[in-house]
Image 1 (cartoon, rainbow, N blue to C red):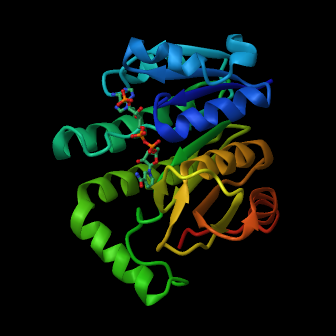
Image 2 (image 1 turned 135 degrees about the vertical axis):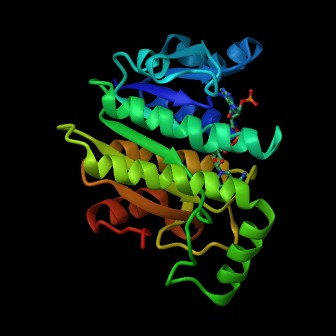
Amino acid sequence: MVRVLLLGGHGKVALHMTKLLAAHDHKISSVIRNPDHAIEISDQYPENRSLIEPVVASIEETDEEGAKELMKGVEWVIWSAGAGGKGGPERTKAVDEIAAKRFIKAALLAPSVTKFLMISASSSRRSPASYWTDSDRVAFKKTWDSIGVYSEAKTVADEYLYNESRKSSKPIWVDICLRPGSLSDSHGTGKVDLGKAKLVGSVPREDVAAVAVELLEKETGGGLWVDLIGGSEPISSAVERVVSQRITSRE
Ligand SMILES: NC(=O)c1ccc[n+]([C@@H]2O[C@H](COP(=O)([O-])OP(=O)(O)OC[C@H]3O[C@@H](n4cnc5c(N)ncnc54)[C@H](OP(=O)(O)O)[C@@H]3O)[C@@H](O)[C@H]2O)c1
């Protein structure tokens, strides 16, 4: 059993992850800002509700000490929070960049934490990937033109995770940046394109959650940056491939 802190616990991807983590017998502290969401969180695994502990806290208003406090005894931290474009550019920066960096820093300082998984986005990069097609490049430009504030905030947080992880002298530390394209609420297919993946297309949130949990369970060192979109490779084999072959979408 691993103790997991899930940030953005009431989010759609996070609810899928909660169910999967509990089914794998992990213990989840799920951070939500609205106490009314607590029952829905526990309902994700009625077979054993004691595995899921809803924790009410606003990520934006939690300082570094508060973040470290939330991480006491926790081994894995997952960032699946996001302003979702609500509250304007300032709030996007406050949640997707500033709060994310604060929780990354706290995780690096918290003695028990060994893994940090960031749910980012495949368009969160400074320039198009070398392996993309023309349509991926067009979609990338459109994304930055339409939601540039969000893309910038996520990119800065990802860069921070990467750079601070490389500087850290923590004896055991695994940083994972999982970068899905457009998310859908369709049922998971269990099949994905993971690693150096295309931008155009979509991926069900249920599949994102399954990939995230499997990456956390399989990745043991070195850190990973992987793009994700719907595809044709079974999730277990895709995760095994990127972990064993050290595939990275970071350029
Ligand atoms: N939408 C896409 O197509 C897309 C694509 C790629 C990546 N992503 C990223 O994937 C991740 C998960 O996406 P999703 O669809 O599951 O997102 P979501 O459903 O919007 O979930 C985000 C969660 O963050 C929570 N949150 C926001 N501010 C908070 C605060 N101050 N304190 C505590 N919690 C707070 C929200 O709480 P409430 O429920 O209370 O509002 C919400 O539950 C996000 O990081 C997103 O940026 C999204």
